[in-house]
Image 1 (cartoon, rainbow, N blue to C red):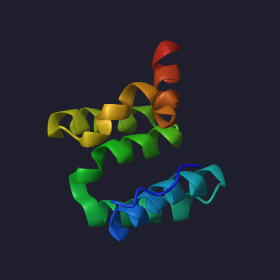
Image 2 (tube, one colour):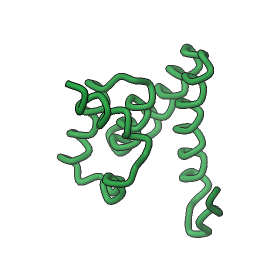
Image 3 (tube, rainbow, N blue to C red):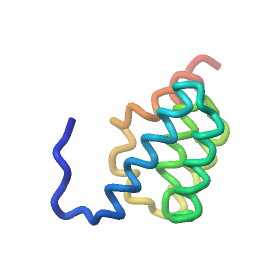
Image 4 (cartoon, rainbow, N blue to C red):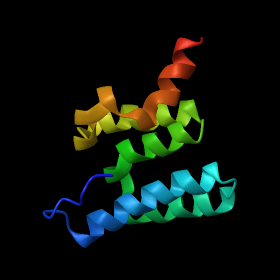
Length: 100
């Protein structure tokens, strides 16, 4: 686990937690909680969270939505794209595309 970057604001830390919770709730079968968490994050951040929404949908196994958000993050120049090649949260998308 990485130490928190001291330059991060409390809102940025909370945002990361919310993204993780959306993924974790789905993995635990708590799909209503996962959807609610995603809705909350989207209401706070709108399109600024496009890359993270791609991560969430990828982990949920919804490749079409993950790729749509990834495309949007590319159009918006989302800073999350810097880690695209090594982002394991997007691995399910790569696996699904490779199996086609």
